[in-house]
Image (tube, rainbow, N blue to C red):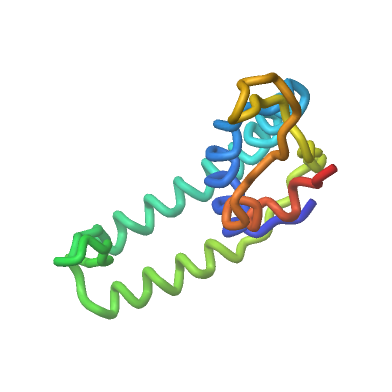
Length: 139
């Protein structure tokens, strides 16, 4: 499967969160295998990203509202070059051999009222599933 670095970064972040869920052993195992396969291109991306941060002397600073601001010790032109090169880095395509993971519709759970063991619907927020659209199936 051909993936952009940006897709790999977003999927990796979502995989970290989804792997915290209590899922069937096969699903959990498949998610771990997928994360391991994405790890190599992610490390390569991160090495280049760190190099760009160093080259353009980029750092983050919080504003009064607590939001991250990207700053540079260089010129505003350096910041523009950094943003341009980061955009280019995120658009680099990589071939990764992975199989889609099947997420179950229901997982083992407990009734809220009587604490009886039963199957409950797997509930995952849409913002967590969106970056994984190419990587998972439901059902």
